[in-house]
Image (spheres, rainbow, N blue to C red):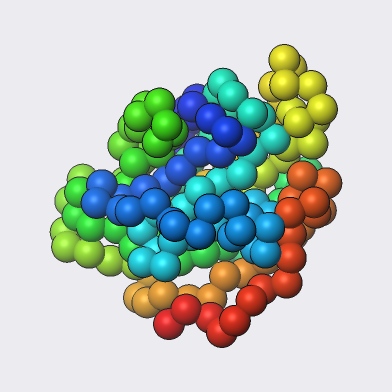
Length: 176
């Protein structure tokens, strides 16, 4: 596991493939989605919502060769799992606005071609960060592992007020 500081702008950061295009549905996906993140239709970019408006947050990243055990919610307030599609060049993490993007730590340098990955996002402290941005106490934990195919989103835990304000029912059929 690697701990990094990730730039946040406009209450978000991204994990994006090098050739990904930003979703064109604007904030609508946050208002109708899971309240933690949205993934574009191609699956190669995720925008993660934060309580922190600007600055940086602590993110622990665990890139694995196989699926981790089911999540233990513990102190995590939000846990959502999605599929993402990365090329051999691998994903970047950071802010698109400031263009401060770094290679996702731990992503295998020998990954070849394009493949699906499962990505499990955990968040806590988003409400505290939104209430007092000067005292950033927000933390995120991201687990990443290879997958055979794209799978539906799994909402393991959704309990913070930041997510509740923007959460809505899942709309439409799952993306194949």
